Length: 454
Image (cartoon, rainbow, N blue to C red; front, side, top):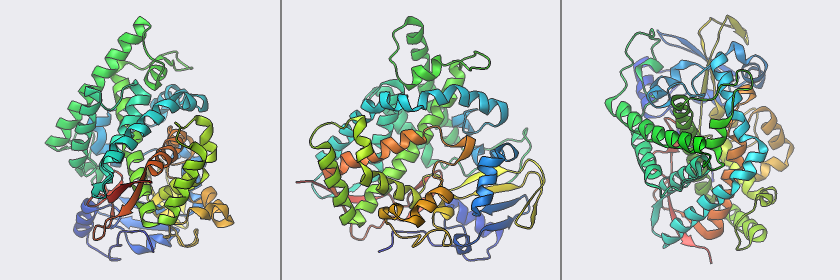
């Protein structure tokens, strides 16, 4: 059995047809040859883009010379009403300053400090799903989104998802996603700075409401820090960390931008990965039983402890394989700052350089059985080599996701806790087909039957 994979488009289509396909799904808008090509060039009347699957080129762009390939503004154009000038969209000195302040909050020791909040969120998710475990179909993406949002609010602001403000942000964010903010004119046509971006009314409205709620949380935390009553969570750590070079801290407005991207990156991507992991375990019940048996052996009936994570190896490998097959962020776009020459092709300054975890993770020349689900592959040489050369669900190099370590604790932890509590089965006639807009989600949701685990 092969996990679901979107169909590829015809090799040659008109620009108008491509834009229509892209609007429906980024993944099925791409030709099948990208699963074997080391590099491909795409031309439009407005710009050229070059998709690079060659591991040497990926390393060049992300690790060796990242300053020559800044993040392209094309993808982020539609997200700016929500993200402002967050670390996700900035480049150069602004980005470096932001990372100097943010990174200490996600260092190894802090992961141990945030672990109890993750466990509490996992217990809440297991209880909610346990209450629904009667075998009826459940749209699992909603529940993984709920769980991931709970993790974010508990670790960032020490608030459970049941808190009124946290619940409102969660609901508003779902509404913001439905507006498809990435599909903005400026993502396809290079527009001057002064030209209006024509964001949808609903996109602007939901972004304003989310930012207002986050601003309230941030201002309240600023007051608690000043009064000496703030809890020791991620928000407090970030807001009290000075830039080691200038001594400056984030202002309230800057912190709103960063919290918005923490919620976007930490909630949306984690929810996507956890939903696909549960779906894959439903498709492959033998692997589900291995995860459940491991969770019972390591955890028993008690709450997980940080030291347990090193022993949840099966859950880790299942989550790792899920990220390979369904990377939450399927494509990353950089921009050539100067003229380049890649594999005999000339790239002009401003050319778009696309790095695609989706295609790299399924590349037929780099992975054995690339479309198959096999968490055991990482015990073999091809799997280990793939991790080194062709695996980047969190990007790589200086711009690697700040929360990568956080996500690799959160994902296996929640997976083990949920599978320990419940059994998941596929719903006949409702296969999950992946589509990508902001992240890789199920086209019509991901539906599973949930049953109690005896």
